[in-house]
Amino acid sequence: MSTDLILHNIGKYIALDTEEKEYFVSLLQEKSVKRKEFLLEDGHICKYSAFTVSGVLRGYTIDNNGFEHVLSFAPEGWWMADMYSLISQKPGTLNIEAIEKTELLLLSKANQEILFGKVPKFERFFRIITENSLVSYQQRLMDNLSLTAEDRYNNFCKRYPTLINSLPKKDIATYIGVTPEFLSRMQSKMLKRK
Amino acid sequence: MSTDLILHNIGKYIALDTEEKEYFVSLLQEKSVKRKEFLLEDGHICKYSAFTVSGVLRGYTIDNNGFEHVLSFAPEGWWMADMYSLISQKPGTLNIEAIEKTELLLLSKANQEILFGKVPKFERFFRIITENSLVSYQQRLMDNLSLTAEDRYNNFCKRYPTLINSLPKKDIATYIGVTPEFLSRMQSKMLKRK
DNA sequence: CGTCGTTCTTAACCTAGGTCAAGTTCCTTT
DNA sequence: AAAGGAACTTGACCTAGGTTAAGAACGACG
Image (cartoon, rainbow over all chains, first blue to last red; front, side, top):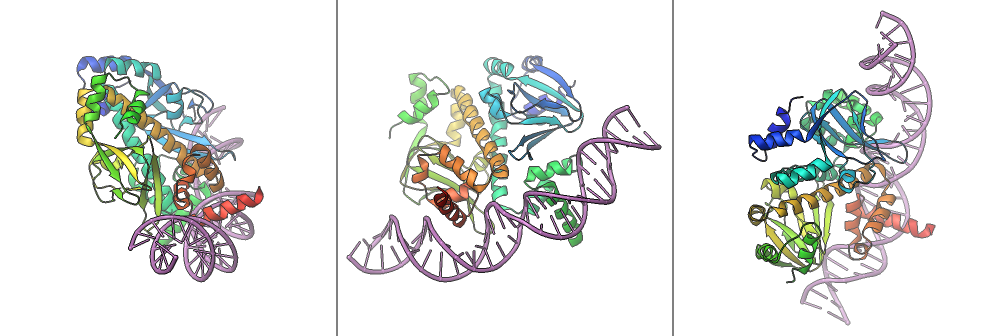
């Protein structure tokens, strides 16, 4: 599996020499998940950060009434993990499933710690991407509290124009915080208005 | 101003020798903000991370209809910043205000970068607290999508029992994502039930 | 290429929580 | 201690979005 994408990605934030690159890559393992296959199920302990080389992952929780809520998607070039479980090494609540056939590179928590010891620059890399992630969750939280469902949907379309056609509508719905039925009604209303 | 609390706090995640502690402290500046005084206003660029030594800060945004939404509180021992603005050095949307007289230690973005260069361990410290913060925003987002207002209120009371009496109810309301009027009605309903 | 399960749509009805308005109580400031 | 403004409460009414149900269309797999 090609490691170009992941190295390019990291290269945006920290500079690595050839040896460091090779060492980093040696800590990764490849994994392929089929459509609808799970990478992680709730109640289990998350042992890996997953980087998507191709395909898309979906991370979601199931509430007390059995409804799904999408926490995040991980298309090409994105990382995915149950951060709560990964950090605490306690059973988590996230389900991670492939929406389509997906190729991953996995970095185990154990290897990540070893990496931090050997190449401290990676501590910086993960600090930076965690900060960026934090900012986007803060924004999403404020959006949920202050925007209408329609505005949130339009934001989603603007922000992820490529994703919009490759994701099931029901998952977009629960990502932006509405029921699939309501998204459907909203879309037909928007069409009529145009 | 005492730096015991901040050093103790950092000590939970990384070990520092006396010299490193002194160096770190030398990069901080003290600041005192009065009740209702602003530390940062929206439209400005955030230049500092603030650590609360005593008192409480409130970080909130104002939406298009003029309504406030509390993003976070920073009581004793917590950090506060407009992370979006701090990272990007672009104008932000967060207002940071003292709820009561508050004593702060400020670490400027410039000094933080210098600190990372001189004592790389701090990169680890900030990675870890950013990860923890990320996890709590993820949890809060899922709670907003799956719990009723009453459950969110009860969670808040359980999680921050000490804060509950020192914060204005209107701020608790917009933190959990309801109007102050609705929180009021909810509370009287809960009293009657008991 | 048919079929069976998922996903999507539409419609009628429902409810949690919002809005507006008017009072009351509590503080802050002088 | 008085006054003025926040913060809080309560009530009547409203609406964005949820729920339930049933049919239609899509698409994965044999």
